[in-house]
Length: 379
Image (tube, rainbow, N blue to C red):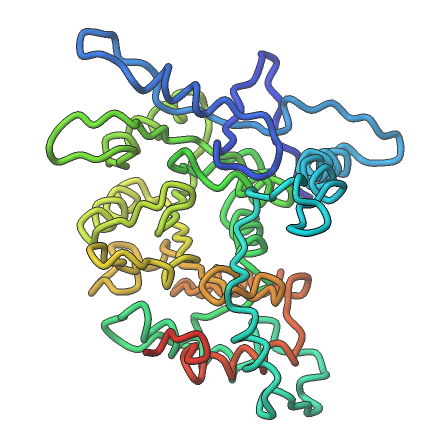
C-alpha cells in the first residue's frame, strides 16, 4: 500500500506549474524571478524547489481516509474555477458578457472532419472479441497500428515494435501509472518549470511521487541562449539540491514540444538531456503529445524515437495521445512506447483500471491505418 507524500514540519515550498489549470496556489513565476534571475555580481541563488503538494492540505472529512481526503482536495481545487465558468459560460448570443475558458487545452477545430470520418461504414464494426476482456496492453491489431503510426511520424530509424506498445486511456493515466511503477512513495522526478500543472496531480494521487522543479530563466545571457532554455547545468544543480535535502530523484520528465512554453528541443539538446539521465541512472519520461502540432516552418520537431541509438533504452519511456494532435480529448486514447519489458508489463497490469473499450480500440486502429488522413496529417 502506498503512503502519502511526507508532510514537512516547516512551511512547504510546493512545486506547482505556473501554467497549471488546476486552480492550485503557485508561486513559480515570482520564484523564478526572485531565485533564478540575478545580476552577475549577486550571489548564486537556489534554482530548484522540491515540491510536496499535500503539505498545504489538512483533512476536513471524517468519512475519508487521509489519502481520500487528499484526492478530494485536488478535485475541489481543480473544479473551483470550472464551476464558476459553467455558471456563467460565454455564449455569443445568449451570454456575450460571460466567462471564456482559457484554461483548457482542447482542439475543437476538427469536429466536422472527425464526425464525417467516424460515421463512415468501416468504423461501425462489432465482433465478439471487441466485446470481451482484451489483452490489457491493448488489442494486438491496435498496437501494431500504433507502432506503424509512430514509426512514420517519429521518423524512427527502424520500425517500432508492437510488443513495446501499451495503450491506456490518456496521458494522465500514463503519468500516474509510470510514477507508480518507477518510484517509491516520496521519491521524485525532475521537471523543468513552468510546466503543465496537472502533472503534479497525475504523479501524486496514486504513486505519492513528488516533483523537483528545475526553474528556467527568462533572461537571455548570451548569443547562444534563448529565454527559458533548459540546460544540463540547471538539471545538475536541481539534482544535487534535491539530493542534499534527502530527496531521492528517480527520473526526469521532458515535455516536447513543451507545454506551456512551446519550446521544441533540438536533437543535440535531447541527446544532452538523455546523456545526463544516463550518467545518473535516471528514468526519462518524454511526453510528445504535441508532436504533430508544430506549424512553424523554421522549427523542426525531433522525436526521441528518431535517435539512431538511445543512451539508455531501458530507462527511456515515450508517451503520446490523440487529445491534442487529433482533437479527440473525449476519446481518451494514450499510448506508451518503452523497450523495458518490466516497465511495460507493470504499466499493463494497471491498464485493467485504465483501458479503452474494444470498440474505441477498433476505431483508433482505423484512424491510424490511414495515418490521420481525415485530418490532413498524411498530406
